[in-house]
Image 1: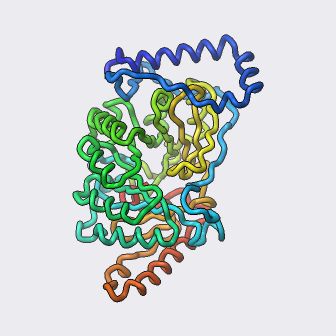
Image 2: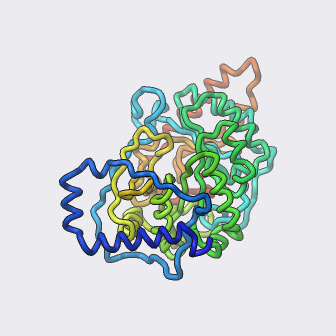
Image 3: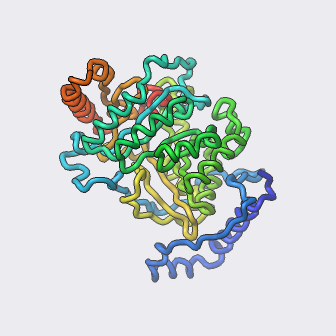
Length: 422
């Protein structure tokens, strides 16, 4: 995108307006906000935009930097996790009971067409054999049983799910089960080709992972990825699904100077930009003994955004499918939302209501640690006459796995993120 594009010009305008408002009339604006609390909840006016607008705001030659001297009041509020769906107590018997599980994250492959340092093993990639992957029928069997247990939210993950040639069939089978929400996380590179088919198969919404808006830095982070291909994928996803979510893993010294630029996308578009604290997992390139140096806390991210865009307001969204553990915030006058996932600085283990299924049939209680149960033997022993017995075995496996959810994670996982799906 050229720096002369309409979106770049618009970004300069809102930066200029904010500087004027911030330094000329702070007392009057504070007075107005406190005297009219409803003003904070007004829906922003929609702005028209030309078809020539592009999606990504290119940073200028100078970076936004870290505003370490700025102090802010934490305006975020913790949100309940995924409360849409059937009307029954979310935590009826505590977060480690089977009745508390509301989401199943399904990794359909450990393969990916990118090589991000925090995801892939440092010693090289050793992929699973395709014969060891769960088939579409197996995935539908497990998902259907989870649905009968009360799980209503399913998310397709990887690796990169779009590298599976039978992905559309997998989605169709899971959609036929009748979930309240079926979503997918992707790096977006195959969206120009697949977005329409994914929507038709039953995907409700997509989340795209991107950690830089700069082509050279994007290439370095992803191990050779092309940013222009991501842009095309983002455009295709936004056109087909109407809105998108962006996941940004914030890493100190890597991309933390782009936080405000990412947040600007949520001001101008009806998107949700979620900032995720760096998590050291498995033997990934960045998960070494000094992994803590990459951590940028959610509070730091908030300060960085507010220093450029102004105060952030909490968003009540407990009924919004897919909110998950994120705290949602909005910029006054902005169209989209900001999400903060503080997995390291403020673990949300006590309210975690999800399980994870790997592409080889391992049911995991936690992204980091906890326990896991192999479902493959149950599936392989089943036949048409033994499905009832299989249900009993699956229920026992789900119950055992849920009971192994840790009270607080150990802040370092044993499996690579590429095999679990984040």
